[in-house]
Image 1 (spheres, rainbow, N blue to C red):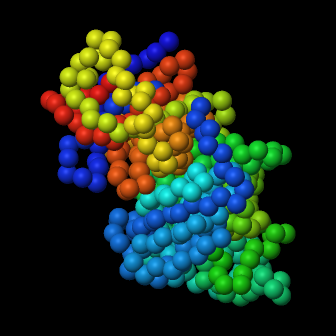
Image 2: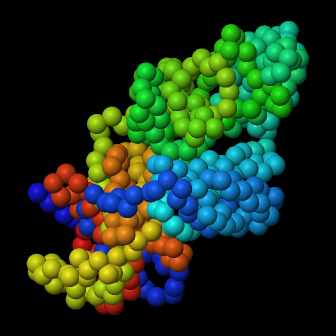
Amino acid sequence: MKSRFFVLFICLLATVAIVGCDLFGKDDDDSVLTGSTGTIVGNILNEAGSAIASSLTVTGGNKSVDTTTGAFTLENAAIDGNGKIFLTIKGSGYINTYAVEALNAGQKVVATYTIRAVPAGATQNYTTLNTNAVKAVNIAGRAEIDIATGSIINSTTKAAVSSADITIVHTMPKADSKALDTFPGIFAGIPTGGTTEVPFETFGFVYVDLGDGNELDPSKPATLTMPIDPAMVAAAPATMPLWSYDTTKGQWIQEGTATKIGSNYIAQVTHFSWYNLDRPLGDDVRTLEVTVASYSWSYEDHILEEEGTTNTDKTDLTKRIANARVVVTATLAEGENGAGFSSGDTATWKEVKSTNSNGVVTFNAIPSKRRIAIEVTTQSGATTNGYGYEVENGVAKSFINMGGFQGHGTFNKR
């Protein structure tokens, strides 16, 4: 059974031509061989979307490059056995960005990354830590930590320190516009007692640094309080899995459970780096298949399709685009895609993959019954973004045409 609807798909290409993109809703037949490499051509921006004029270092696979402009090329970087390259972007005054790219062997990816400067006031000096309990509240209305007496210790000597510069940066999915762009790693983690990653969506995440050479004494847990994004309080469950990010493995690990008290989540923690409140998607997922092609499309073609004529351009494999970077983002609220992905939506999930040699990529676990946004970037740097899919036998399918539009409108069949 097919479910069809019309949506306006807005396309932005790296040309001045008016573009039409035809969308409607198992790839990955390209295997990644051990020893495969890929190239990432990246541009790093700040949260405002402006260029970076600071010294940054980018590492990924077996490569490392420096940049003072934000532009970089990580050439012939090693792809792991799961077809991924884990990137770390760091620089003085910034919070590390941990990004993940899914590549085919030999592929070049063109991508933009966001790095967040440490906000003003996020780092505060605290004293008498060895003689008094302290409540660290660096920015009003954001995460805070209750620190037990003598619980911050020198990581080498294990002796309690008397003072420390503590940094707390709390990110909310709706309140912070670039939240998903600065989310560490992927939207999946290892649950307690499990060995396989499960997909999840974020309700907020926090970065905590106790200062150079310091760590939390695990025998003296701290209490972490994370206010819930105001746009998400009504949807927040009574308890929420709490995850920490292992920067070495590039993986989220469940550390316990946070309890909702009022408009906050509260949990005990025994170490600090990144913590994340993420709700597992469970069985509430669906498969999305995205096909990317390029051909000239006209309004007359649209009319013929409405009358039942098959467009052979859609099945012509010579017009497919391989190695295109596809980013899918999903909202918190349920809703069909006919309304589009509006500025009022709260985005809570994102995944990045690449099309195979047939121009197809499959996302196996996107949040079900949510509005989604799809962004495609080819190896040449051409980009299009919008939304829309057709559901066929339970599988959502999107067909994206990067080619030129000729005719009287841009309403395309999904």
